[in-house]
Image 1 (cartoon, rainbow, N blue to C red):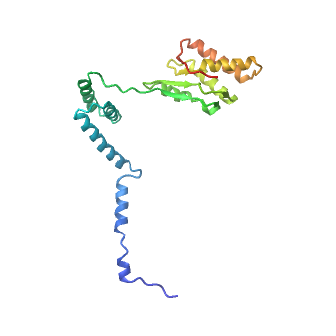
Image 2 (image 1 turned 45 degrees about the vertical axis):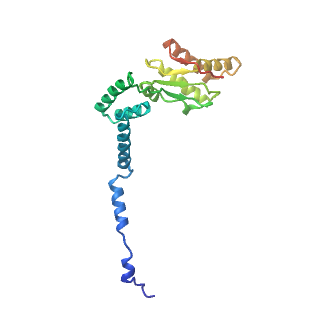
Image 3 (image 1 turned 120 degrees about the vertical axis):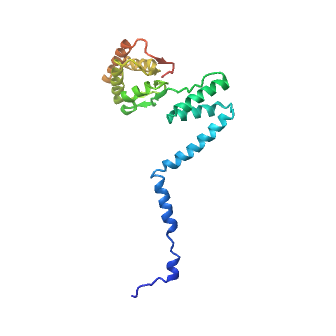
Length: 211
Protein backbone atom coordinates (compact mmCIF):
# COMPACT_ATOMS: atom_id res chain seq x y z
CA UNK A 1 0.00 0.00 0.00
CA UNK A 2 1.57 3.33 -1.04
CA UNK A 3 2.34 5.80 1.73
CA UNK A 4 0.08 8.83 2.00
CA UNK A 5 1.93 12.03 1.23
CA UNK A 6 1.15 15.38 2.91
CA UNK A 7 1.16 18.27 0.49
CA UNK A 8 3.06 21.48 1.26
CA UNK A 9 -0.27 23.30 1.63
CA UNK A 10 -1.52 20.86 4.24
CA UNK A 11 1.78 21.00 6.07
CA UNK A 12 1.63 24.78 6.27
CA UNK A 13 -1.68 24.55 8.18
CA UNK A 14 -0.11 22.54 11.01
CA UNK A 15 0.94 25.38 13.30
CA UNK A 16 2.29 24.36 16.72
CA UNK A 17 3.28 27.85 17.79
CA UNK A 18 0.28 28.40 20.06
CA UNK A 19 0.74 25.09 21.86
CA UNK A 20 4.42 25.73 22.51
CA UNK A 21 3.73 29.22 23.84
CA UNK A 22 0.98 27.94 26.15
CA UNK A 23 3.22 25.33 27.69
CA UNK A 24 5.98 27.89 28.15
CA UNK A 25 3.57 30.23 29.99
CA UNK A 26 2.32 27.48 32.28
CA UNK A 27 5.82 26.35 33.20
CA UNK A 28 6.84 29.89 34.16
CA UNK A 29 3.93 30.09 36.63
CA UNK A 30 4.91 26.96 38.50
CA UNK A 31 3.29 23.57 38.39
CA UNK A 32 0.58 24.43 40.90
CA UNK A 33 -0.15 27.99 39.73
CA UNK A 34 0.99 29.48 43.04
CA UNK A 35 2.65 32.49 41.41
CA UNK A 36 -0.55 33.36 39.55
CA UNK A 37 -2.61 33.11 42.74
CA UNK A 38 -0.16 35.32 44.64
CA UNK A 39 -0.32 37.94 41.90
CA UNK A 40 -4.11 38.01 42.19
CA UNK A 41 -3.76 38.27 45.97
CA UNK A 42 -1.38 41.20 45.66
CA UNK A 43 -3.89 43.00 43.45
CA UNK A 44 -6.66 42.37 45.96
CA UNK A 45 -4.50 43.54 48.87
CA UNK A 46 -3.63 46.74 47.03
CA UNK A 47 -7.34 47.36 46.41
CA UNK A 48 -8.23 46.86 50.09
CA UNK A 49 -5.29 48.99 51.23
CA UNK A 50 -6.46 51.79 48.96
CA UNK A 51 -9.97 51.72 50.42
CA UNK A 52 -8.54 51.78 53.95
CA UNK A 53 -6.21 54.64 53.03
CA UNK A 54 -9.19 56.59 51.66
CA UNK A 55 -10.90 56.34 55.05
CA UNK A 56 -13.14 53.28 54.82
CA UNK A 57 -14.98 52.64 58.10
CA UNK A 58 -15.77 49.00 57.25
CA UNK A 59 -13.74 47.22 59.93
CA UNK A 60 -13.87 43.98 58.00
CA UNK A 61 -11.45 45.48 55.48
CA UNK A 62 -9.12 46.59 58.27
CA UNK A 63 -9.12 43.11 59.86
CA UNK A 64 -8.57 41.37 56.52
CA UNK A 65 -5.66 43.66 55.74
CA UNK A 66 -4.18 43.22 59.21
CA UNK A 67 -4.45 39.43 58.94
CA UNK A 68 -2.72 39.43 55.57
CA UNK A 69 0.07 41.68 56.82
CA UNK A 70 0.67 39.36 59.76
CA UNK A 71 0.61 36.23 57.60
CA UNK A 72 3.10 37.78 55.18
CA UNK A 73 5.25 39.12 58.03
CA UNK A 74 4.87 42.70 56.83
CA UNK A 75 5.40 44.03 60.34
CA UNK A 76 5.98 47.66 59.38
CA UNK A 77 2.75 47.75 57.33
CA UNK A 78 0.89 46.04 60.18
CA UNK A 79 2.12 48.56 62.76
CA UNK A 80 1.17 51.47 60.49
CA UNK A 81 -2.29 49.97 60.05
CA UNK A 82 -2.75 49.60 63.82
CA UNK A 83 -1.87 53.27 64.34
CA UNK A 84 -4.24 54.37 61.57
CA UNK A 85 -7.03 52.25 63.06
CA UNK A 86 -6.54 53.86 66.46
CA UNK A 87 -6.67 57.33 64.91
CA UNK A 88 -9.76 56.48 62.83
CA UNK A 89 -11.87 54.53 65.33
CA UNK A 90 -10.40 55.64 68.66
CA UNK A 91 -9.75 52.06 69.78
CA UNK A 92 -7.08 49.41 69.12
CA UNK A 93 -7.35 47.00 66.22
CA UNK A 94 -8.02 43.50 67.56
CA UNK A 95 -7.82 40.24 65.68
CA UNK A 96 -9.71 37.83 67.91
CA UNK A 97 -8.81 34.24 67.10
CA UNK A 98 -11.55 31.77 68.03
CA UNK A 99 -10.61 28.65 69.93
CA UNK A 100 -10.22 25.28 68.22
CA UNK A 101 -13.01 22.88 69.16
CA UNK A 102 -12.70 19.10 68.87
CA UNK A 103 -16.37 18.06 68.76
CA UNK A 104 -16.79 14.35 69.43
CA UNK A 105 -19.41 12.52 67.32
CA UNK A 106 -22.56 10.75 68.49
CA UNK A 107 -20.71 7.43 68.63
CA UNK A 108 -17.09 7.73 69.69
CA UNK A 109 -14.56 5.23 68.41
CA UNK A 110 -10.82 5.00 69.04
CA UNK A 111 -9.83 7.24 66.11
CA UNK A 112 -12.31 9.96 67.12
CA UNK A 113 -10.26 10.96 70.15
CA UNK A 114 -7.69 13.59 69.10
CA UNK A 115 -4.05 12.85 69.84
CA UNK A 116 -2.28 14.64 72.68
CA UNK A 117 0.19 16.50 70.45
CA UNK A 118 -2.65 17.89 68.33
CA UNK A 119 -4.53 19.08 71.41
CA UNK A 120 -1.39 20.65 72.85
CA UNK A 121 -0.75 22.51 69.60
CA UNK A 122 -4.33 23.81 69.67
CA UNK A 123 -4.02 24.84 73.32
CA UNK A 124 -0.97 26.93 72.40
CA UNK A 125 -2.99 29.09 69.98
CA UNK A 126 -4.39 32.43 71.22
CA UNK A 127 -7.94 31.08 71.29
CA UNK A 128 -7.05 27.86 73.10
CA UNK A 129 -8.80 24.52 72.57
CA UNK A 130 -11.91 22.68 73.69
CA UNK A 131 -13.00 19.05 73.71
CA UNK A 132 -16.79 18.93 73.33
CA UNK A 133 -18.72 15.88 74.60
CA UNK A 134 -22.13 17.45 74.02
CA UNK A 135 -23.19 15.19 71.13
CA UNK A 136 -21.86 11.89 72.51
CA UNK A 137 -24.44 9.17 73.05
CA UNK A 138 -22.42 5.98 72.61
CA UNK A 139 -18.79 5.04 73.12
CA UNK A 140 -17.05 1.93 71.86
CA UNK A 141 -14.52 0.03 73.97
CA UNK A 142 -11.76 1.46 71.82
CA UNK A 143 -13.14 4.98 72.26
CA UNK A 144 -13.12 4.61 76.06
CA UNK A 145 -9.56 3.26 75.92
CA UNK A 146 -8.34 6.21 73.83
CA UNK A 147 -10.11 8.71 76.08
CA UNK A 148 -8.62 7.10 79.20
CA UNK A 149 -5.15 7.38 77.69
CA UNK A 150 -5.75 11.02 76.82
CA UNK A 151 -6.99 11.94 80.30
CA UNK A 152 -3.99 10.23 81.92
CA UNK A 153 -1.64 12.06 79.54
CA UNK A 154 -3.28 15.37 80.47
CA UNK A 155 -2.57 14.76 84.18
CA UNK A 156 0.94 16.17 83.83
CA UNK A 157 -0.02 19.00 81.44
CA UNK A 158 -0.34 22.57 82.69
CA UNK A 159 -2.23 24.19 79.78
CA UNK A 160 -5.48 22.28 79.31
CA UNK A 161 -8.27 22.26 76.75
CA UNK A 162 -11.72 23.24 77.92
CA UNK A 163 -13.75 20.10 78.64
CA UNK A 164 -17.31 20.82 77.55
CA UNK A 165 -19.89 18.43 78.92
CA UNK A 166 -17.40 15.92 80.33
CA UNK A 167 -18.97 15.84 83.78
CA UNK A 168 -22.34 14.81 82.40
CA UNK A 169 -20.64 12.33 80.08
CA UNK A 170 -18.71 10.64 82.91
CA UNK A 171 -21.90 10.70 84.97
CA UNK A 172 -23.67 8.67 82.26
CA UNK A 173 -20.80 6.17 82.30
CA UNK A 174 -21.10 5.81 86.08
CA UNK A 175 -24.87 5.33 85.75
CA UNK A 176 -24.28 2.56 83.20
CA UNK A 177 -21.85 0.87 85.60
CA UNK A 178 -24.42 0.97 88.41
CA UNK A 179 -26.99 -0.50 86.03
CA UNK A 180 -24.82 -3.56 85.50
CA UNK A 181 -22.86 -2.58 82.39
CA UNK A 182 -19.64 -2.95 84.34
CA UNK A 183 -17.15 -3.25 81.49
CA UNK A 184 -13.43 -3.02 82.21
CA UNK A 185 -13.08 -0.05 79.83
CA UNK A 186 -15.76 1.84 81.76
CA UNK A 187 -13.98 1.34 85.05
CA UNK A 188 -10.67 2.45 83.56
CA UNK A 189 -12.25 5.55 82.03
CA UNK A 190 -13.84 6.62 85.32
CA UNK A 191 -10.57 5.99 87.16
CA UNK A 192 -8.63 8.02 84.58
CA UNK A 193 -11.10 10.89 84.91
CA UNK A 194 -10.76 10.87 88.71
CA UNK A 195 -6.96 11.07 88.42
CA UNK A 196 -7.38 13.92 85.97
CA UNK A 197 -9.68 15.89 88.28
CA UNK A 198 -7.38 15.32 91.27
CA UNK A 199 -4.43 16.69 89.28
CA UNK A 200 -6.51 19.59 87.94
CA UNK A 201 -9.24 20.43 90.47
CA UNK A 202 -9.94 23.70 88.68
CA UNK A 203 -9.75 22.42 85.12
CA UNK A 204 -11.68 24.49 82.55
CA UNK A 205 -15.09 22.94 81.93
CA UNK A 206 -17.97 24.03 79.74
CA UNK A 207 -21.73 24.01 80.00
CA UNK A 208 -22.53 21.73 77.04
CA UNK A 209 -24.80 18.97 78.23
CA UNK A 210 -24.56 15.30 77.37
CA UNK A 211 -27.34 12.76 77.61
